[in-house]
Length: 120
Image 1 (cartoon, rainbow, N blue to C red):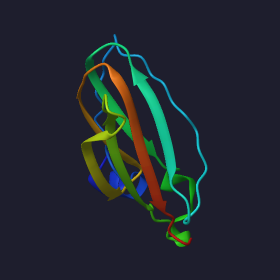
Image 2: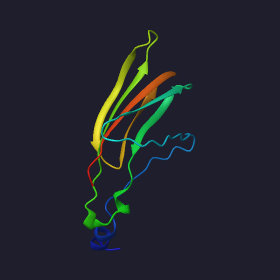
Image 3: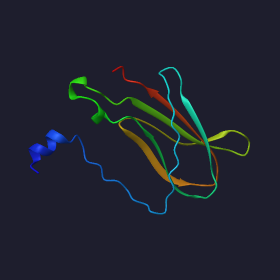
Image 4: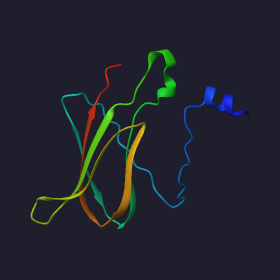
């Protein structure tokens, strides 16, 4: 395939990571511009984890629609013994997949997800 054909038919390249021993868990949620979503989950086994928010692929839309990814904000924290929260990470990006990864200890975690939906 020529470079010109590649640019014509594809918008990007993704090189994914493969971990045969990982388990995938997901939760589908619908949000609006006024409300954030909160996700609480427990980690029972310390280890390496990914936290990802996915949006619908822009490839599902015609180019003339000028579809753009919305801005995703995530704040990720661990519940402390006194009932408070320990900040782990926060990040923001407009992309199909907004993610982070890292080593997590056993415990209860919360993810705050706010999406500033782009008005298509």
